Image 1 (cartoon, one colour):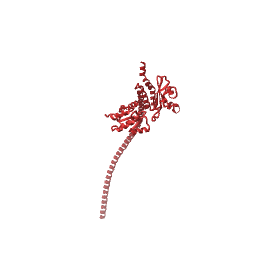
Image 2 (spheres, chains in turn green, brown):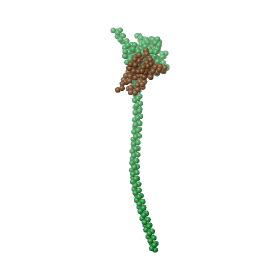
Image 3 (cartoon, each protein chain N blue to C red):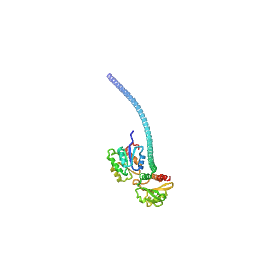
Length: 261
Length: 127
């Protein structure tokens, strides 16, 4: 019996030691797991903080993106507005430049007509205005005779002088048109196909002074590159109608003054 | 301060010269010649930066003026712009054959002359 009890006692002791060792291991594992848990808890807290930080950052970037989109729309609208304004200014600039050019033409024409009292130079100025400013190399310049019944040729370019040497003021063609006292433009005032009867006329500019027709300028054709008459040409015709008549009249004043004195 | 470019205006028409001066004054130094002989003399005495040249003139015409300018070292490279009422191809070709650089047709067109002058005298000419 004693040996059996000894063996039993040793067994119990061994089981007790094993159990204690097992418990120690469990406690160690438990401690390790507890530490691991605490570590993971801490990491989770950090990740939560990082997540919240990133969520805030995303929200901020979203707001920034919205702001930039609004700015982009505003700048695009502003750019379109400026482009339209630029186009308008460009158009106005072209109009102003054209008007300045027209005024320069009119100024030059007026200055040339009244820049001299020499009859030859006044007639030369009329011709130069028609050639260089209107754009014609086929025209004739007339003055009425002392009785006011005929148009006498005083200057011409590119036409048969004998054909137009002397025309009745009330006759057909140039004389009839001049007698009306109004500027005639065939394409606007002419008959069928913009013609002026039998005459190959482009325009007739009666020269008038004090309500009387004192002469006329007949333009038969335009330079090929000219094409057609423009608004500026109407204004040049008005200048010629009045100022050329006055300029030609003034060339006679020194003679009249001498004869009258 | 850079000096203005110099343009020689050649035409027997006082009206044309006056008009060209109206268009270009203030931006360039201008000189004028009323016939071919005077044009050649002035161009050789003081070579311009550009010549606006009427083709049809009594005496020495614009074609001959251009040929003479092209024969001289001082003026052989000066741009010469024909100013002509005769814009037909054969006349233009004749002008180019004489040594002209470009052309404008009459009646005088302000914008065309400004554009042509600016083309040959470069930017910064004030036009």
